[in-house]
Amino acid sequence: MTSGQIALLVLLVVVVVAIGVAVGMVMRRRALQRRFGPEYDRAVETHESRLAADRELINREKQHAQLTLHDLDPAARDRYAHDWREVQAQFVTDPAGAVVAGDELVTRLVADRGYPTEDYDQQLAVLSVEHARPLAHYRDAHEIFLRGQRGEATTEELRQSLVHYRALFADLLDERPSDLTQSETQSETTRR
Image (cartoon, rainbow, N blue to C red):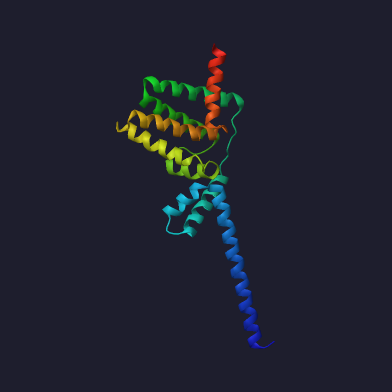
């Protein structure tokens, strides 16, 4: 082999490796986009590049993998659904108190499932791995909760906060928000 052929061979190997790396990155990015959905776009917006966002989301997956998550037994699920109905009923007489109770109930559920609750940002990061879709609702609910604590939220905003909390709550219970409403109706029918 001549030196020209060796140089051409080395160049060909470099090009093939570069193409392989690029294809691998594209495939990984698509997998992250599928897994994180709207949370992927949010990560891209908050980081200086897509590569930095990808690294952040991969780090979240690693943190999530270290958790010991728990499924709820049927009795615990029923208790949580019952407690949620009580929070909703409380809203009629005490909207601000209901939002506080809703925040506490969601936090308790998050903890019971095995997610961290000490640091809000860390909690969001690890929740985003399996619960990315309702996470925007959780952020909105928490923001209204904080404004409510300062006395700056209207009754309609407080109501909306409970609607937002319910989205994550239902996802953590593996129910649709409408399932909670159906169980409320069934429960009322049973009481009659």
